[in-house]
Image: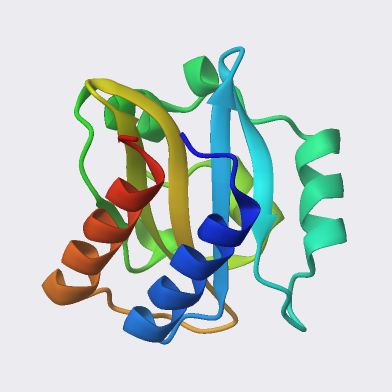
Length: 144
């Protein structure tokens, strides 16, 4: 996965434009957990708070059934109503996420990171077109 923050920021801006969702984030996966790289700055959840919550509550893949499944079958995952979706995980509620779309960032067959669109403060129904855009944009961060 690229570590080029300007490329990551560009991809995040493009996902924000494609979905209309303001909170976009990118994580690297290392040592079996999510490592926060970059997030859009918003009134609801700023990057410093986001990184602090991750530091205080590390997200280990093995403890998260949704992420474990995503790594086994790498495809875009959509949760349009986090509060009522049985796949939801505790960390989604720590950030106040209402709707979520996760696109795996791959290098070959290995998932090295995640590109995430998180709707905070309102529900968002992610469309097939938005999921396709997320998949295409995540590919820009992966195979290089």
